[in-house]
Length: 295
Image (cartoon, rainbow, N blue to C red; front, side, top):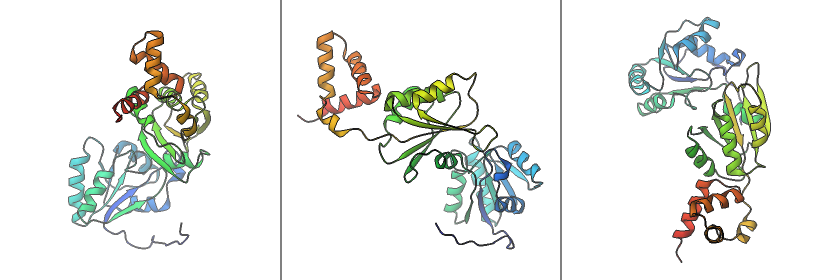
């Protein structure tokens, strides 16, 4: 990346939309540029005006605020875009971190661009990037997925569809769901899958846990409770093609079990999935592909 720097603090703030990153826990992570922008804009659109007001009060910023959250994003985007067309300078902030990344901000940015309004990203704290660079996992290629689905079946399906090999996958996860998520990671990718959990990034109790999904699940389950915002990261290894070629087709294995043990196709499928270290839904899709393959 370029190492050139430009000082703009003496220039008047240009009209347009400013997407301002705010601290994710440590107030020292606010940038000088972010403070200047928040002081200079006409209005600040906030995910939660009460939360942002704490930040503004700390830095003695008196700019008017307006709510901009997932429940009013559409109508508020229209209102703010109309003001921007008249030459307003508006900042958008989320409760913490970078707006538009698993937080409101994308809709107003798209509307402003469509209206020909200038967009100014004001970089700063981001939990996904902060977790990734300290994870010890490969950073050359990574994919950010936001939050995993809350429902178990949908979560397993999302994990089964991840690209394997040479890419790190980054998720946000809620503390009350992280044990279930780790259990699903172990079921889908096997007991040896390495995982990194980053918790309470930049805060007093910041913590990185590294190990297999089962090890991390045991550590967290032993605690009275799991608190704080969590970044979950893993880099699944590619499937071993040689062993896949030697292995009998899933259809053959299921049929053999049904015949030898007089069990249903679904019970046989669950058994084969467990022995192969894959999820039941992944095994079911593979069975369907094999059965529908032209003969």
